[in-house]
Length: 553
Ligand code: GLU
Image (cartoon, rainbow, N blue to C red; front, side, top):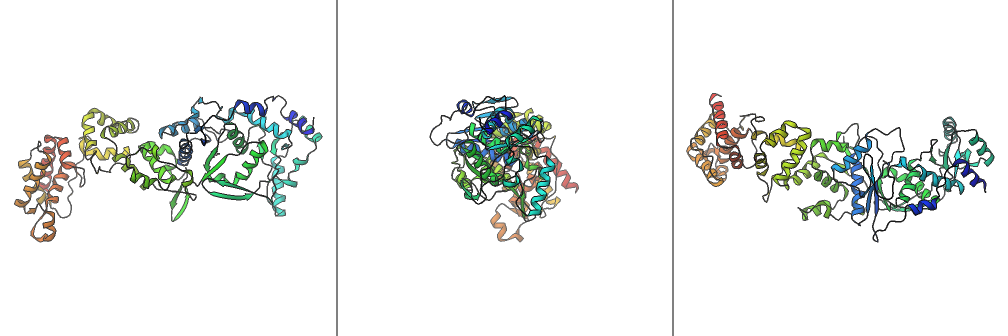
């Protein structure tokens, strides 16, 4: 036995699992040529960030575009940062937006797939197996340095003006003879396991990032920690072991990891693994005071995906918006394929912006209005009531008390060539439907500047005299037009514009008064449809109340 082999046995005396057995347990996947295997690998720190959803979406689309596999792995090796319902937040967050993994973690205590376990905390033996192998090959060693010693090392490096870290001749435990290692281990000294980096500062590595393009960086020379003192792996080591054994082909992740690629490629090489391909995307940014910054959980409520759920954005809208951020050609595709399902968009990793998209709630609202405008009244009813059931009970009760009536509201100006784009999220529906419900309706008789209360009263009196709730749209409008001339208005807007002095106003002013009296709004969808739905009795009593108000004003 070599000293390295002896050391490996000393460090991992009970471990019998071999890399060979691991390879057999997790064989290469049987997938069609070119199929990509991707993953989303969040840490359960309590909430799902919109950037996390973006990462998961792009990873999933990458797999879907090639008939590959997308899985969810929970990176729970940092117990200090972990929170109790962290996994639930991730699983339910992804589910709420339809980002369902093909395998991996599917629930709080649920997993599926043959490459698990998919919680890193349950993979200890696998990390140890490869750590042991690295020790056997002289590529890893125990480091007994204490925090204080490492701190002192940093001080010395600072004074000497050299790179900080544990590397080369600064890595004191690197050169410990076997006898000393043995003595320290037998004395029960705590240790971390470090990589014996084969890298050299003068050498450079090159790799082709699928988003950022060709990248060249110095090799890694740091003897980074593979296993912490408690035997738990660091992110870097777990990444190499997991993505190899889970047969990931493409790692799609945030570009904060790009600086670690030289280390990661080195780890793959030291372990004898085929390297994965990387696609690093820039974080979603927010514009603030002319500058850009990352969306922050502390400052921006919209950083957490729960925000979109609570506000009642349909999942289709959020995904549609994220797609506009992901691929710059998405909007062109959408213009050419107005009603096609999102899944038909030919997503391409290479078309992702290398420099980072700006998050814009206003744009999300516009996208969402568009998405909702294409939904049927029934769909809107279903989705709004599902949202309201949880977040606005009063609205839920109102809408469900008379389903046909509620669907009638959503039907107005919908299913036509140019549907109205007025709802961006379900929390706006209450305002939108307010005048259809006595419980929500609040009269507001304020008139546009060009109309006096006396003029409004005159219009309402004349309209009420002939009001027929059964009238079809054309007849209804003819009646409004017919009111114009006797009251000094013109039914013809062009005529009015030609000679405004000749009239009190035009047909638009006459219908504005009726609209305000019936809905308390200056803008509404199709007024005829609204009046039909409200019914003659309600319309008449609202107009009478308005008339009274204007007469007394
Ligand atoms: N657990 C890492 C994170 O949450 C995963 C990064 C990766 O995708 O490799 O940042």
